[in-house]
Length: 294
Length: 164
Ligand SMILES: Cc1cc2nc3c(=O)[nH]c(=O)nc-3n(C[C@H](O)[C@H](O)[C@H](O)COP(=O)(O)OP(=O)(O)OC[C@H]3O[C@@H](n4cnc5c(N)ncnc54)[C@H](O)[C@@H]3O)c2cc1C
Ligand code: FES
Ligand code: FES
Image (cartoon, rainbow over all chains, first blue to last red; front, side, top):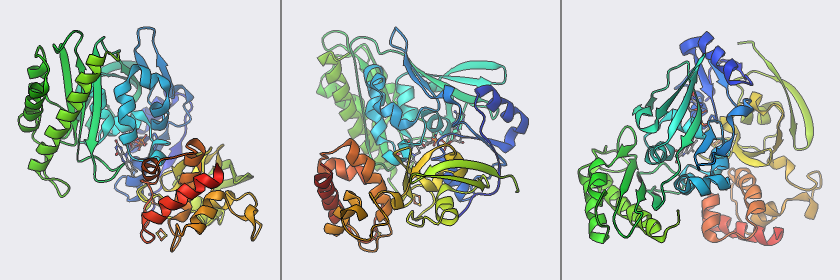
């Protein structure tokens, strides 16, 4: 099928894009990589009257690291660029590990980091990764700029904190504390498919086997990224061994989530997958912390 | 809606200027406006890979991009990959990846083949000696409904030899 007619604008600055959003209101939609938006337009599930294409705004595509290791990524940076930039591997190795799980190379060559976050698909990898990394998002509106924590950004199924006249411009990833370990894994029917369940872990274990901090987040088990709160609390301050990780994984799968059942996976199967994945990512993350990679 | 844009781009080395309606998909622009019908359309929502082309050397889906967005860019389609596509035979008539698909029976009906080849050319340039695992990942975004993937994987191995 073919998209319905629309007016097209390709501004070259963020200010011009914001002015267009202000002028056209709810009728306007931002176009980033188009990898989620254009399929819905082709099927006429979405029929925006005005498209504001962000692809000509060169100022929105960059990856930079501050001297303290904070990573700043412009919203229009292509997913394949984020995947391959050495700064990603150095400052946000969890993000680097997650990138190849997103779709296929042809999609990542076009899809952007900001587009995936703004789209807020519950099965997408990046929202869960950003929550795990405690990232903050810079959001600009006409004459205003605000920052929101990833945890507060994702509100419901495909719903975020973004107002229709705002643009997500930058993703800020804080440096990991010394003694950190990380891991991400997912189960999908075919490489590149949306995951049935995915899990990401970031842990801190500065000395010995005593866990100082742990964040464990899941994708595809709820409307937004799901943080396994009970499992994380159980791990904090605990001596880490296989039994402890197994118990945390059980809590995550059985107590921390209320996953949906659908034709792809039943509720019980999703819980089981979550438990298996939690064990895998926690084991790898604590091992990395112990090995002192960071 | 009558709003039209003038776009200037390079397609298979040739400079092109056309007026397009913003909603025209790049795949339809290539097929209907430029008559480059080697770029195939299977699903029109980014899933099958049949419409894969190169945008500034990178493989992308042409069915989920608008032609107006190609303004100022360089595209390569299947018609542009052979060293000399006007040649009807001989080594100049086909790209090594095309030769490998031919030798290894990497196609039956051929509907998916242009998409596979456009995906594989940048992949093999970046990874001249891929493992089977890497090959399988590289083609995971392309669907073939009749050949079966064994011969396609064999063709990629052969293409790596020919290019290496
Ligand atoms: C076949 C296929 C498989 C896929 N598999 C996966 C997968 O496994 N995992 C995964 O995570 N994703 C997957 N995707 C989606 C892909 O990652 C998209 O690139 C991503 O979801 C959207 O990014 P985009 O840049 O293409 O945004 P677009 O499609 O251009 O935009 C998406 C939405 O976000 C809004 N938006 C975009 N940028 C901004 C901004 N800066 N500020 C405010 N709003 C903005 C747009 O208005 C639109 O509503 C897949 C896509 C396809 C076609
Ligand atoms: S036609 Fe473009 S991916 Fe199927
Ligand atoms: S050769 Fe027929 S679909 Fe692949």
